[in-house]
Image 1 (tube, rainbow, N blue to C red):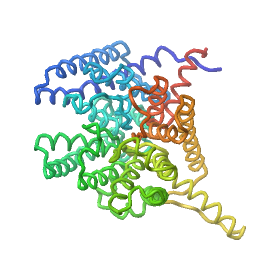
Image 2 (image 1 turned 120 degrees about the vertical axis):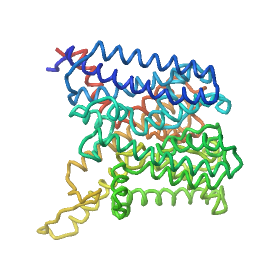
Image 3 (image 1 turned 135 degrees about the horizontal axis):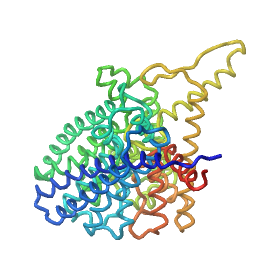
Length: 500
């Protein structure tokens, strides 16, 4: 018999949702400050109204659902999955007020794309959008990379077992420090430290390329937030192609790789254990999969003679490969060039890189390097068992911050999540094909959405069918949360309807 959720369960969920909504509303101070700085009156009104909506809605929930009860596992998972949907809707309000989106659905699409650090966009006339709205696009990407729930854990929610359940529900099952609140604050310390350094590097580069100091710092902070949080938004419609700068591209490659690294690995390196970078199973797997997919991509491009010189292959081929593999989505080519110039092999290689993703407990999406590494370790283990004498006994280990014994449950979990991702990629591709798009293009765009990448071959436009927009919104949401909290939410609603 399925037990129906009680009123107490609903109050607990509502109370913590209210806390998260208040935290989200407070972050709109950044675009308000930007609007004041650049004297943008209409955006100032838009964000003032939006922040009031968030604060009123959040405060009402915390007052109506006030409880001293801590979160259970079910509560934590449901809060996380609902928080991301609510954040996408509330984050879309200032977009809608700006008038640069065709419909509110398009606003929610871009808001979810930002929070999920995907980077697919439906905004119109991006080159003439206000600085306040543009900075909000990148702020939500920065927040989404750290995690919507991390906001609450850092500033609004007391440390507890329930806090850890929300943390796990946001696809972060590794604690860096003993307490998840301290872990969340460390994530912010890492991110803000890199934000300062990265913004300075990009701003100086922008100034050297001929931009004014104001523009170079504005673009620098926007590009850093999108690069480190492996998102892919940019202040201009041409994305990274707008800058035509080799230095800009090299700097963003470094930032993208940093963003794709496990925050626990950052912590270990900060403790001056730099040898961990070479020993860790994730970094080793990332290097091997990046080289393998680039090898296939280079063969495909070379066969067609697309980029005949090494520099062109680096700036147009390798750059898109790293952008896709880290889940960032920056582009230095136009979207339709993927279809008209790259050919099937190169496009398949890039699609595979997007599907694999970066490190666990990082800002990136996709299957993740730890899972891929564990699966290949298990395959190697089975081959070795066959080749060794039957009486031989050995214990297989892998190194991830410390030596870890490889167990069947870890392999099962890695394989299961991998199959879920491949299924998610396939579902989006099938829906795209049913709507008339070519198979490879549909798979590319679906993988980009579900792996939270943001590279586009031209399918994602304001004119695409509404059903595909909804499909990609759901893919971005499910892919970012890595299934478990979404499955729990589905079970919660089933229990609410059919439970006794």
